[in-house]
Image 1 (cartoon, rainbow, N blue to C red):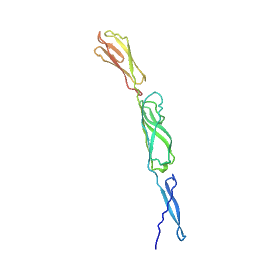
Image 2 (cartoon, helix red, strand yellow; image 1 turned 45 degrees about the horizontal axis):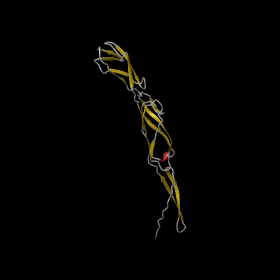
Image 3 (cartoon, rainbow, N blue to C red; image 1 turned 90 degrees about the vertical axis):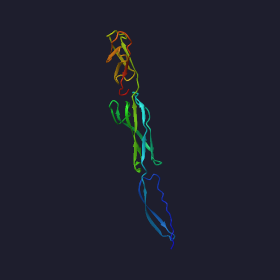
Image 4 (spheres, rainbow, N blue to C red; image 1 turned 180 degrees about the horizontal axis):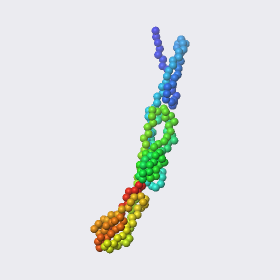
Length: 212
């Protein structure tokens, strides 16, 4: 008694969704006897898709940031695409403003960049993992200047110093300190001469604010 082994090939259609499919193989032998063999075809899900959003480091400009967020994606099967990508932002600004899946902030703070997208055949993958990016809007640097009137003081005289920040006026407090404390002293913005002669020197500082 002899037997012959034959091999049958089953072609699975391109991009066939994951699942279990049933079919029948029909075999006709050398004696023209036809036999039907039911088969099950299991299409497994693809591995995890990973979407990673790039971080962004920027500086406060008092206007909208015009850069374009970017992302990378791994694990997509050839022919599948990620589309309709938009971004929203969550976090707390330096001034305490809370953003929850909102439009891109324009004020300084640290925020997560959360992508919103569509994968048409996402159900054919084990899972989709998203790594949000981080948007950091740094405070803007600035300078400060100061003037006083009168500029010449006698012993015991006072003068009020007026400081002015180059940008972001009102965002951060001005303070003054004598660099020659043996000649002059400060109380708030008022300078007092405590010697009859000499050159009084002082520094003006603008404190860190929310955006500066």
